[in-house]
Length: 307
Image 1 (cartoon, rainbow, N blue to C red):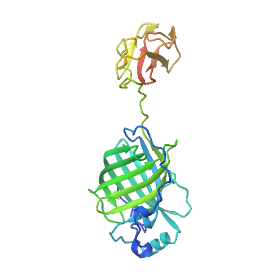
Image 2 (cartoon, rainbow, N blue to C red):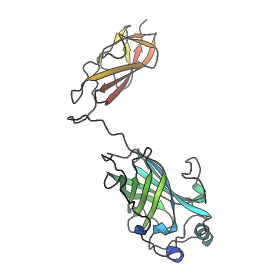
Image 3 (cartoon, one colour):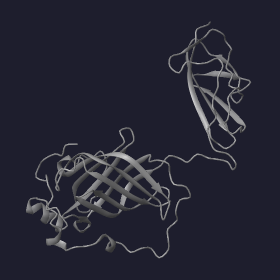
């Protein structure tokens, strides 16, 4: 991602001259008792869209950045605040870091609809190679990858290994804590918390003595995965009674349609007869659920071409 060049193009984080040297260990005091932790670590990351406030004291590096003195004075004096937005894209498997300035007292997180281009001081894209999760000692996620594109106050990070570490609580929604970004050989950025959304895929329900797994729907007739199935009979029968469960658990069925139809003797049997209201396309949805609450859903289109 290219960084917009303007008067905020680079940030002068001359830490030693302003605030002296502070260690990460001195930033927080451990809680008296351990916070609640999760029982099972999530298998992957679903959504990450958070924003945090950075202070000069929590940006640690030996690299000397450059910036207009008036911008540094504005930050050091408290008129402007450094914010970093972290957004995970599951489709591209990337995390985009956007660091920008806001006026002191601005709401956090900044609404995504707000254009921060004019105040952006750094942006980089992390190409994710692996995501680690753990419940020990507290819930956490570690995102590891390589910087794909970068520009900002500490130079070009492209090609550098990098990691983003995030702690969170078991509250609903989760509260974010102890966020650390590390660009290898360059800089560490720490914040005690962040605001926004962090979610994980729902854990499957696995009854005792089973290995989990979802029902497998087997339909007769066999419907195409794309296109439509033409039906000439009214009523028209569908049969899913050959559907199976990997743990041989009992199954229940639920049919529905996007247009009015009658399911006889009802929508909760595996092999109902469908009475169409007239010619046209009907999108039929079938959900098969096992006794552990795990479901599989399929949709198919039936075109009734009869009279």
